[in-house]
Image (cartoon, rainbow, N blue to C red; front, side, top):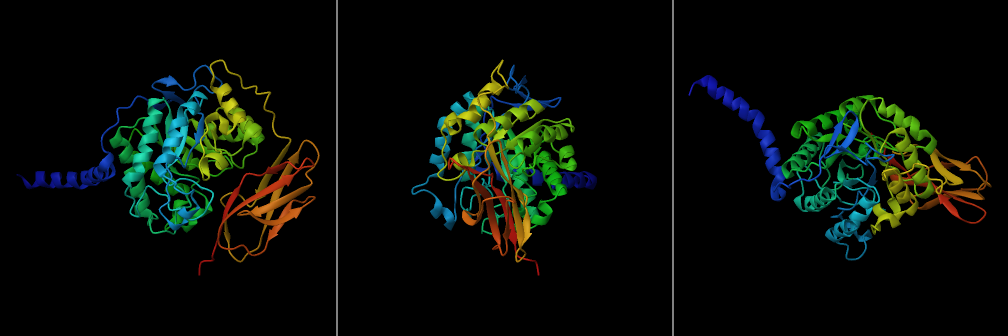
Length: 457
């Protein structure tokens, strides 16, 4: 054989082998392709299911209404598992969700966010990851993920598969750095491709700019738009037909570089006021791509109002019911999780449905932590101020109490609603305020998740 031909063959193998190896390693015991029945695609900035508009004939037509069910495949392989209910079984948790899945779909939900590293379960220190430190995949974990994806496929629904979650650091199974991060995304994309799934959207990172990622090896790099663009492109190189994005913080904003690179735009509304949602959606829609909010922890009437505002502005809305679905003991009751929100889902997705939900007016009292911002990274040993904003249509609250990780930091009976935090311990701090009215009915703010870090020497 001529030397030139041998040289060409060697070069071809040099480029082909890494891709083949990735696909083989990622497939493992779950390599049998799944015969798909549901395909999610994008055309002219709109979502299509099997070539037809999503939610046809409804106010949410062409959008993707969704719910965050991030811990439906949860496990904890670390010592913090003592916080789980006695006898907790990861497979039984997944089964409990799947038994009720048809009820969520019947209520108008077409998308479900599921996490390969989960979300905050209500306690710290969980070892919950589908990745090994080198970025390869844990196939026992993936079996549960496969069950959810395939059940959704049979029901005509979509899974938004989230890869990286900021709390999965500083334990023996943490991803080991930049090379492992690229490997994790590559293996995930190759696994989706090898399984033949066509109803999966990929979220590279949940709130990539979150300060918690600062604890990761190469975390400062990971938290940049440039890193997210590189990981998005890396996923696409392993699975060109896969639709890929990454999500920002709860303020509903998106970086222009990510907007240009992503196939669709993932935004969060946790700390976004309802009246600010239309402006955030309009800014995102300027990129000409579908806008999908896949996390908002407003509940009840406020959640319903947020859904209406998002749909009217042209974005699919995603509900996060953290106390019920995400925190242990993980409960799934279908629309009974939050009747007001699921009434909104049903009306907004029903052919001929109405976006005039007069029966669910906004709450008369809302409470928000406005400083520091969600995801902030703050240095240890430096005092900081926590400020809350109280809005009320009726009488002012009698008292407002601040909590950090459920520990009270003080009560205020009149504005300004601010507290000094003189010496916070290093680590994660979940901040929220609770306002009590004359009828003694407490109203709590959405949680603001910050991280206090030791100064680098």
